Image 1 (cartoon, helix red, strand yellow):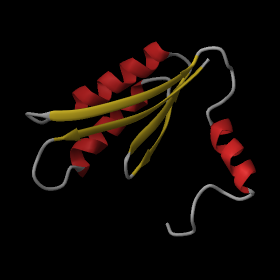
Image 2 (cartoon, one colour):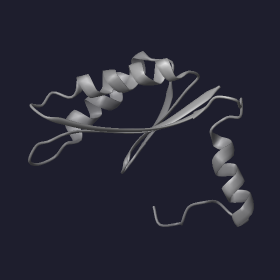
Image 3 (tube, one colour):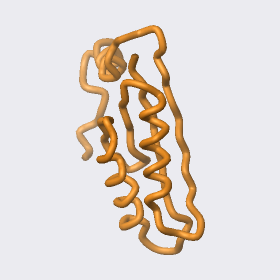
Length: 104
């Protein structure tokens, strides 16, 4: 089974959130997940939903603020052993090119 999620954890504060977001991302290191942070959040991959929820909770709790906003969107492929990267590969096959622009 493969579970993929988009996690966004942010303190509700004025100014830069980078220090607190870094704490949330660092908290993921304590779990058997792979992850990649992008400007909109962090994509997390896990073998089971329990591990994913535990990692997301740790990231949420790692943020030190009076108010924390967390969004978690999960794709739980319960009957497939396909890896998450196959989703992108399928789109790229249809496009005939990478699914990104050269503007990075």
